[in-house]
Image (cartoon, rainbow, N blue to C red; front, side, top):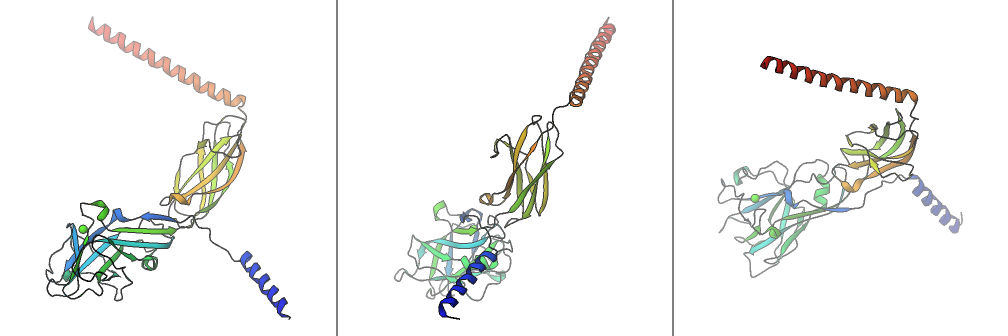
Length: 344
Ligand SMILES: [Ca+2]
C-alpha cells in the first residue's frame, strides 16, 4: 500500500469510528455552591478531650511545642451534585485570619480525605477519624486576610457516587514547628469569610420518548411517555405539556409524577374539548438538577366527538343532581315545620 493510500485508509477508519462509537450527551456544565451545608471543627493534641465546634475560628498547628498539634475537619453535603455527574472542577477555600509565621508568608497546608464518619459535636483528638496517608493536594500559598485554595477535583471525583458527605482534613504541610494558622469557620460572624466549596459538574440528562395517548374520550385522555435512560438521576420529575392545534405545545401542563426507574409513565388529563386535535410532549427532569430537562418527540391525538350518549349521560347526572337538591330543600322545610309545631 502506498503511503498516501495508508493515510486515507486511516482517515476513513477514524471517521467510521466516530460514527460508530456511542457518545454520552451531557447537560451544560454548571457550578454549585456547597458552602451552605458545611460542618467544621478542629481538634487539638494538647487538649485531647475537647471538641472545638461552635467557635468562629479554627486552628492548624504541626507539633506539640509550644501550641500542640491541631487538625481541622470539614465536611460538605454534596447531595446537590447528581450521583452520576462528572466533577469537572472543585475548589475549597479557607480564609486565613492569622498566619503565625508572619515573617515568611507562603507556607502551604495539605488536605487529606477522612474515611471514617465523624460528627462535629463529638470528635476529639482521642477519637479522631482515620485519615488518608498521603495528602491529595497542597494549598496555594496565602497571606493573612486572603483565601487559601485547594483544588479538590480529583478527590471529589474519586469518592463521587457514594453519596456520602465529603470530608476533608487540612493539616500543616511545611508549617514550621510550633507555628499555627487560624482560619474562619462556618460560625464566623462575617458570612463572606466562611469556608467555601464550589463544584463544577456536568450531568447526563435523562432520555425518553413520547408514547401514543390512550383512553381517549371527548373530554379526557391518558398521555404516556417512556423513560429509556435515567441519565445521572436517581429520581425524575416527569410531566406533559399539551395544547390544542399547536404542534409546539406549551399552553397547558399535566400533573407531575416522580419516577425512579426506566419504563412507561401514564398521566391523565381532562377538561379537553370534544373533536379537537391536541399535541403533547413528554418532559423529564432530574429532581436534583433543573438543568437536566429532556423531552420526547411531539405526538398528537384527537378527542372523540361529543355523542348523543354523552349528552344523555350528562343530562341524567344533571337530573339526579336536581332531584337531590329538591329532596334536600324538602327535608329542610319539613324539619323546620316540625320544630315550629313542637314550639306551639
Ligand atoms: Ca463549626
